[in-house]
Length: 310
Image (cartoon, rainbow, N blue to C red; front, side):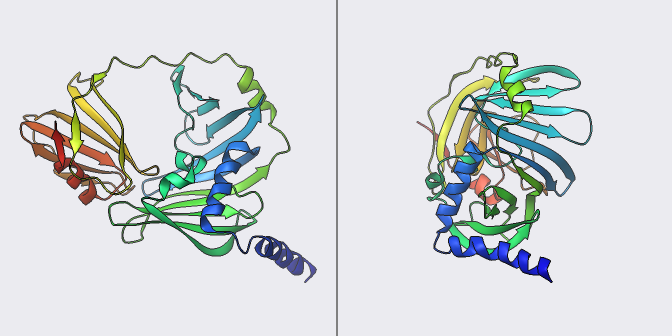
């Protein structure tokens, strides 16, 4: 009985202290926690066709963010981030580095960025409270303002504000992707592995393939909040086919658009995987436009159809 009362006390203390906090404030605290706190997460990345157990460690060394990601199943595969450089270490190829401010595949990079950038496309709504990884948590729903993108929900540790669970939901509120923390250890200081990573001489950032400025492609329609963040012209690795590439984002959802000479082989009009990644192709004049992203197929198709050149 005494243990039950203690558990109830732990659950109730954070509730009273944070009763007036808005959903956006919870997310802003999460963003700061992901950038500044020292912690170790054991987590599981769930998709319909696979399960990946991971360990993620984060801390600050010499006032610089350092992070380490380890894949626990299959051949050894790790990633290390020091500042804005991410190095990938795999058993069957030499280590290589790229410029990036987050390690992809753990949590959406937007969670550690400016939360206000998401407000054009989403609204933030508080949900209930639960217990995850043995810790009391607060649910925050990130609800799409329209049917042109998916919605999300995240459970935040009520003590540290770190995320304990993240879901991506389709328009029918079916689960497409989930990241579930099974153990969270809050550290008093950055562990030895991060100090060693900081001191290590990693390979230099890989030079980017030669890319020419893209044509002046524009879109007559984009969902609210989406902007063009990159545009160039390059050749695909392997086939060496020349393509125009445009990257679109609303801060949380990213869509890639490729424009190339229409191929002789007919591509599928649309394709949707069980993990939420969709593809839509449209013929625009003598060009083939392919839009790819974790968004509804209808959205990708409408974006592809709306492309124009000025």
